[in-house]
Length: 321
Image 1: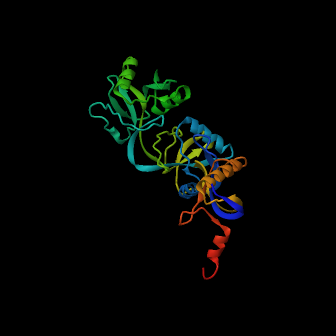
Image 2: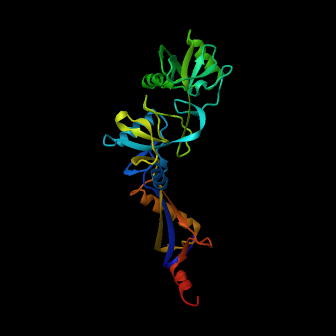
Image 3: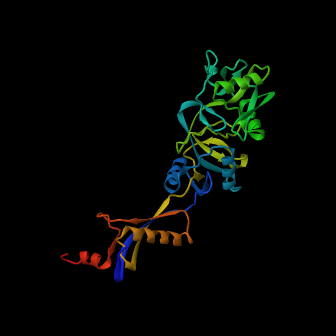
């Protein structure tokens, strides 16, 4: 360490990056109480936050409804109709990868078979979602396993989903041949049985693969963008994307970047890297008493220097130097 004969003024630049909102919870929602089209709302959220709100599960749905409060009627979220049909899972796990379809299935008979059923032999069928079938729910156990609960009363796929979400985790999720056999063998005698499989074309604005949906039952999905109907227990409806409504953004606020020019009179040579690192740690500790969730670093010039002596810096600025 180099000690100087007297305190010398040094000039340096600090870079401070801070999140305005600390990331303390898995999902954060922000109600923007300004009416915009879906596309305008998407642009706003992408600039200020992460994107329009994505909803991954029932916990997120409840959190979003609480954020919106009782004074909001309709609110845009980040779900928009795409063009590619995919078989997905009701509990939000995304696109299905395991397909033990029965022979000749799926055939989309009549052009409206968008929900998944299981035959007694374990083969799968695509059925009309409004048709009646027995159904199977699952409960996620603490060890990660799934417990299956069977209902012998016939119901539509949507009503079956409602029962499962209200009393258990969701309609059954099936990802392996062993799980499929376990469900089929434990169900007793039945013709067809609803599982958590469904087909749709909707996509999340942020690119998330979650397949969680919370549509208002019996309401035709007429528009290409999803809106939360707050008075309907937070159910979703399809709406014209060019209509104006308030909206919910998801994620943290963007990072704030601050450039701080400091002048320090020091008896130790601040061009020494060890001295600079020690000083940076002291500044970091001091700042954390007043603010949180930030990153502090030195900014170097093109030559790699962080600090310059003030007289050297002033000399370079004089005419003819």
